Amino acid sequence: MDLWGVPGAVPFMVSATAGTTVLGSFDPIEELADVCEEHNLWLHVDACWGGAALLSNKHKHLLKGVQRAHSVAWNPHKMLMAGQQCSAFLVRDKTGLLQRCHSACASYLFQKDKFYDISCDTGDKSIQCGRKADAFRFWLMWKALGTRELERRVDHALEMARYLTEGIKKRDGFRLLMEPEYTNVCFWYIPPSMRKIPDSPEFWQKVEAVAPKIKERMMKTGSMMVGYQSHGINANFFRMIIISPWVSTKDMDFVLDEIHRLGADL
Ligand SMILES: *Cc1c(COP(=O)(O)O)cnc(C)c1O
Image 1 (tube, protein in one colour):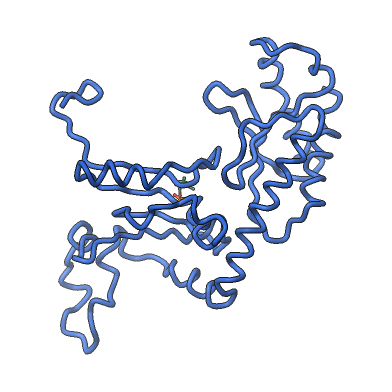
Image 2 (cartoon, rainbow, N blue to C red):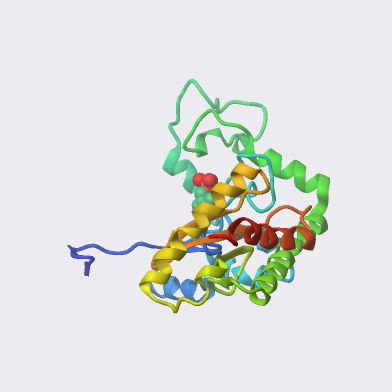
């Protein structure tokens, strides 16, 4: 096979993303798993950001088929707000794959003649040797809050994202980049002076300068922090991410009011 001009290159894995960082998009895992099964490929799912949806009965369909992946990466320190850092790498393999990949078998560490089941010693499975017990943060948090509370938090974040999206659709001067799949709400703010300009390269060139200016003003005012960026052909847009279980519809209204207040004169 000739892959990207490399003769003899053979694909061995597919890396799907469940919740992309910028747009919060989800790859169709079930379909990808079919392809991987047919061609005997390793299926990895990067669910660092989107994995939390699994805790919600309402939204877990976003990761439909994830149980067919060979490996999954998930960061409970993102949507679930476990203390930084808490990154999980889950593998379906039960034959000691990570051990075979990473084990250094240092004879001065991880003695084999201990009094307990030494399969509990996980140190030799990880790339690093000395590291914090990241999983403990998540375990403790899960125990303290319970599955129902974690589910409520995920549902609430998605509900707030939906509310913000509807607000953007209703208000003059706000334009949605795409219908959100997750809690990434990406949108442009068009100041009144630009609203009559037809869609054209000149228009988007002007729009490109709006978000950075408003961001500068919001930081100097100290009223909020909302990220912005360009993406592919899309000029700078705001990327509002909702995670906190403490935000309300009032906060969502404030975000749009404040952006308008800070940018109406541009
Ligand atoms: C944040 C993120 C990562 C990186 O995770 P780290 O543990 O911070 O290195 C990978 N993939 C996606 C989609 C992410 O959003």
